[in-house]
Image (cartoon, rainbow, N blue to C red; front, side, top):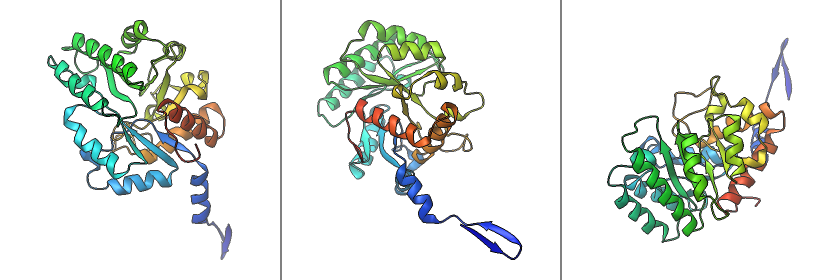
Length: 284
């Protein structure tokens, strides 16, 4: 609405119009750690803002034995919104990883989880336990098959190595997403040909993110959105705490790159996430 005050024209945005726009948006955050201490003081507000932004569900990957209780508390507090996974993060893999994986399997047997994750490999921080990381990944992929659950793969600076590890184990029973994908077009095509999805987050908004060509060449049917909260906040919040409501910025960036409506990106990626994790959120 345009109001004229004196000789000045002022654009007045009605709050109801803003809310109705968000109501049209359908989004799923397929990867967020909102159970961590960074959200202890304002978790209710974080969840409220996510819902106002059109987020219908938040999928929460586990890290290791130390994060399970906090994750399950959040899942119990928001049972229809925050959905837990179970797994051992590669950065938590040590020489005693087998003991941790017995615990992972025990939890998965209870049937409370929507995926196996966060699992994978990481050569960014340290390669001391590289052989253990590889073995832990293989075991957890077999757990994903055993319990008929999708995986959430972490592969920081180890995409090619992770693809090579998964290929011999891949079959129609194995489904999942390569979380926080930052690779090139060739790697993206290889992952998609294997039957897996790409998780796209805040890196897509970075000037040096180098994901524009990947997103131009990739179908919406092969993407899910994620924030990886509290990490990797999108521009203009880069360097600050990330949160699920910021997924709108990732969604908009993809829409701009592909030159399509943001609502179409949100709908397609939401359907992909629901199909992958065998969930039904608002609107199906």
